[in-house]
Image 1 (cartoon, rainbow, N blue to C red):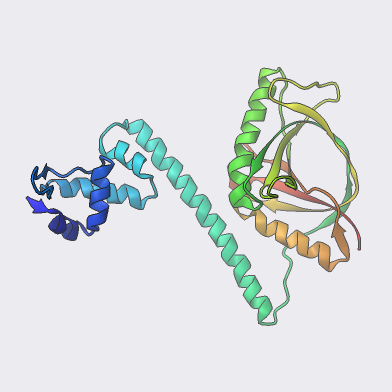
Image 2: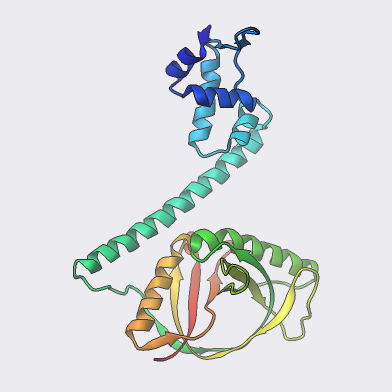
Length: 276
């Protein structure tokens, strides 16, 4: 048997952490002295502690770790949990890589190197569109805030349209606008599919006419949504450098999207503009 200090030292965790694991039922000691309250652990519990730390290191919450370690998760469910976590980590790597690229560009700019635009921009009018749409609130702008909201919205809208006997797609549209009411935090996110003008609202979705605009700066973003912020930043820089001002809510037109993998996606970024 090992006292709590010995067990903590060998297992390379803090005594405080072991006490917490005991309190939440994650790793109770093998024995608690009824008089002193001292906790003692058996050698075989190092294996359990190792599994706890391994899954915790992968980013799982302690309640998820408890389910895994205590054997209440079937193999198929564990596989899904691991695959989902892998997707989250891969997405975060993409986001961090894009941030690193933008940070390097800022550093080079401070060192005297001008910003180099890597996008091809077109100026064109945007036609009015009759769409079915739903919306939700994201905690802010940027892929890290928008992506977890907009993806499920499109899935929900596609299901609602199919239930109503309407075939969604193949192209879809997203719009984002700042929330002015309340504390002014967050962004209103809209997911939309173009539909026939005869289409009427149904269960879970509304019908709206997105007005056209006389002029918009547009560019194509290829690949993952995790790096789309970089393309938006480049488009905004082009608008400023070429004597235009943003004049309306931005849009994203998904030309190639689901069920294709994100590395094959093609998204047209659309920003209404006017001459400065």
